[in-house]
Length: 289
Image (tube, rainbow, N blue to C red; front, side):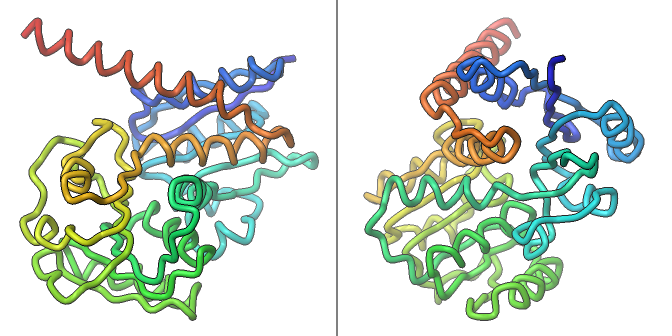
């Protein structure tokens, strides 16, 4: 019997995860299928219940349900407990669904691969959502001490900073407005926000403080080269693309579900092909207008 997996989110119609995960299953001859499930927020609990009743083997959870899913699970692993966000759900042998978070693997993996010798002592984090929580976990793993959190709405981000300070007491978090970043220093810049997904210009203050950053990592993977990464490359910084985070968190989820090492080459090839096909389709659509 074919094991079923999915990604669930508000709109995952363009997600490249099915191509990537199905390539992994095929590569290792695992009888499994991975699909997309888009659901409005008002129907999330009902749809989650339906999926669990179907005995689905595993799920990836994305915007905006990484926190909303928690009350409906049978428990959380240590990482998901610390950051209070879930991106991967696994059905255990006893039938319970447990929550995990592989996003920190999606951040730490590419960082170590590209800049293995980098000593990240301070970082600037853009955003305060689920990916931002995963970033704090990843920074704790690599020994980062100081994290500046740059946001548009400082008041809304205070709870995030408070939560992360409790989870990572050795880490110093500083909250800053995106309009006033002049006093921040950073080896690494990580964008955990949707900034750049619509092609908007970089905030002037952010553009001004980017020079000198050793590494700039953008979680946005569509478009591939965001304005943030383009600017980083012009400044001579090492640029890490969002598809790397998607790949590495997917590899970690695959290992969690199957107990087998993920076939990175097959998954990378399928991911890149899916993103390129989507880009070509979008270009054709614009040309017809």
